[in-house]
Image 1 (tube, rainbow, N blue to C red):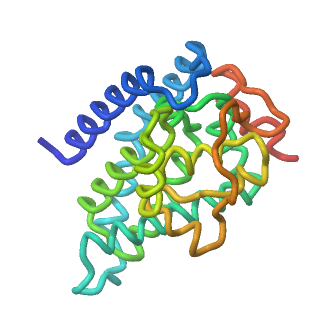
Image 2: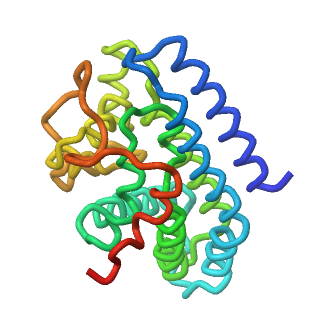
Length: 248
């Protein structure tokens, strides 16, 4: 079994397990909304097709043709740390650069959070992310196995912190000292721009503290989610949204 196939199986099982669990033990009891679930899964299916066609080849090429700047003492743990720092920076830039926000906004327009939000990304953002990450892989000659392991950890972390799963407060508070939890990441989806532009980390929670982007606010019952002043769109509208008035 290839690493990519194993990644797919692990992530699929985690998705199904979280999907079922958060409906049994929800942190927020508002309706999940069936139409938005299908909308999110539609975006996910497009990206699922894009993965083996473009994303994986970009990573494989960058890894194989790297500059060879990887020190002999560099190991898997440092690969993961470097890539986690990269994804923090990339995520933050997506909120700052208007062109990139056009694509990332599709993810943020979801007006309720659950595990399906974790797979709701515009294919343009996925492709741009793969290209920029390819540069990092190329410069540091990061092995493809490290990239696949990182992708697996990122996928599992993203499923977890977007979920609506109710966790014991004391446990989640301690866990959030190490990794991003739902209570931390839900603030990032608060429909207030100052909160949307905070809590960018994906795996390790330290990056927001180090770079002073941690929101002082906490998740609360009935918190409005989405993009401030905007409503969610249909699947066709979400797909075309980044390209509307692109020259403006």
